[in-house]
Length: 135
Image 1: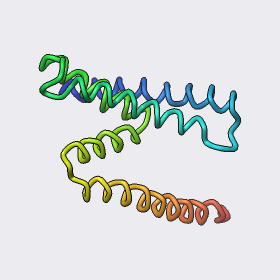
Image 2 (image 1 turned 90 degrees about the vertical axis):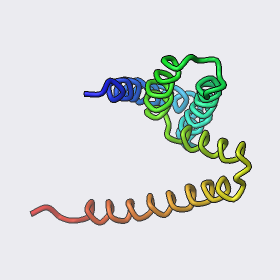
Image 3 (image 1 turned 60 degrees about the vertical axis):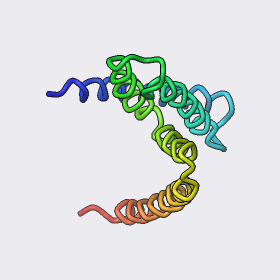
């Protein structure tokens, strides 16, 4: 087995547990009417992946071994388990940095619209299964 999968899995587990923990703390403090916990996680995860991403680029401060570890364990694993919004944010930032305005705008538009449509369709399908009577 490639060690990269182990790093991603371990990081993902830590990120997921951190997401559950942070969401509970924030929701308890500020209430669950508005998804403050999710917002805090998405903003915090985006901030964290921005720091790591800047350090992990070839011109960054990390050597090649550290860059691989930071990318696999921290960015894909921890940040990916904590919030995939952080990956979306970094990829959009990279498109903006590359002056790919149309692609950056498209990524934002398509991600929000298509994900909202997908969650709605998933909700409809799940509701259909949920309302079926068992035999």
